[in-house]
Length: 323
Image (tube, rainbow, N blue to C red):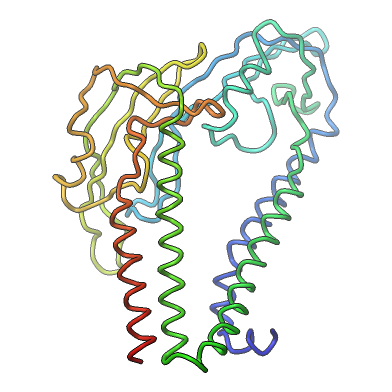
């Protein structure tokens, strides 16, 4: 194993392991933040209102010249009041850390219905700063297993590729190149299968009626190449509102599969031509996470992935036979 790793440039290993380091750093920051509320005193409180709320957030996007994009996501807006020393305070922060939305929203709303009595943990130095949940469940356990799995995957792939290449070199020509191409083809094939499986699963989700809010094209410039301005890129921009089990949600996924960003406005707008503002549509909703929804449960673009995988497999066989 050591011999195999020594043949790999240090910068390559560093690039592969960088995501693990980022995960650990963010987990350490989150753990540091979580240790503070554990020492905060508590006060009795009551839930004033509990509902799903749509908010626009900024998201990092390396594909854009600006480096960011804006998304509308669903959040659990739990407003509560609590009494400290005869003064009443109000807040809507449920747990520690940053809430990115679109996850566990319905469960949080159900867990904190309006009128429920709760225990509020507040900052004694700034009483308006408070939380309802101060113990993130298994943060380090989740991060640890994720990091270990990632490292095992990387080094397992390195060692496996090396051993397979040594074995195959005795039987086929150009073994490393053939195996490398076949590996990429296999990854693409598994990606296509995942897309199809996800689309099939979405097709079994409950269907509710929704209303199209926007249906147009978003225009922006892609990331700079270091010298010139990025090319003008188009992407379908669609949003819709729907209700599920008494809560209102915002969705933005027209079809399952890869999101298309292209320099052609015609191609980018192909998937939304059938929609217009105010139109009533069928929305497929994930019952386990109602913030997740789709209008068309089909694996858009999967044919391209299958075609690319097939071409790569043919190339792998060609190099293996002809060398």
